[in-house]
Amino acid sequence: MPRRALIVIDVQNEYFSGKLPIEYPPTAQSLPNIVQAMKTARESGVPVVVVQHDTPPGTPVFAVGSDGWQLHPAVAAQGSDLHINKKLASSFAGTGLAQWLKEKGIDTVTVAGYMTHNCNASTILEAWHMGLAVEVLADATGSLPYENAAGSATAEEIHRAFSVVFHSNFAAVATTLEWADAVNAGRALEKDNVYLSNLRSRESLGRASSD
Image 1 (spheres, rainbow, N blue to C red):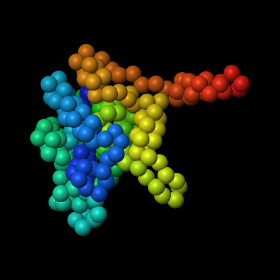
Image 2: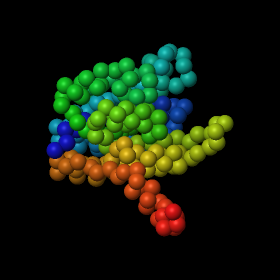
Image 3: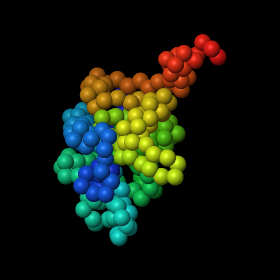
Image 4: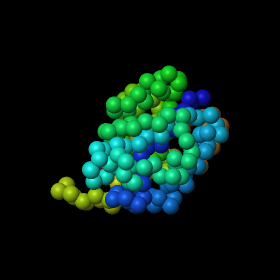
């Protein structure tokens, strides 16, 4: 039976009414799922970690004390077993999260919150390298679009691509409902692997038999 902790990352006003509005999945979908995951965790005895990102006062986003820095009220109202503040992307960097999880005997972390491709991804990869099993709630996370010198990508493209990559190796990607069923049943969620993920893609494109 997995010993889980739910990590709710950076559900702050900056992503709702601030300068970094999450686009996909829309927050009208992801926020209720985040709250539901927190309620499921509480009802099931799964500890909840709430993470809040800090930048210095006067910076454009997440400036400590600003409205954008504040937790979204819906998440703040749920409370937490551990509240940590971070300055880097990973929830483990410069925080006591790893030690806290070890002391609690946690072997599986479930990630919700924002953003799929940035702080979530950093936390997921670090947790995986630490030997923890990782779960990602795809409908309780989200991305925004980018354009820079390397090119451009929509929020949907970024969220989908990162979710596929996570599930191929680093984390079991599931919906909030699928996760709640697994929590209630006391079972682990299964991820895929790099070989099979690639093989299916090659087969669907008719490439596998020609190699």
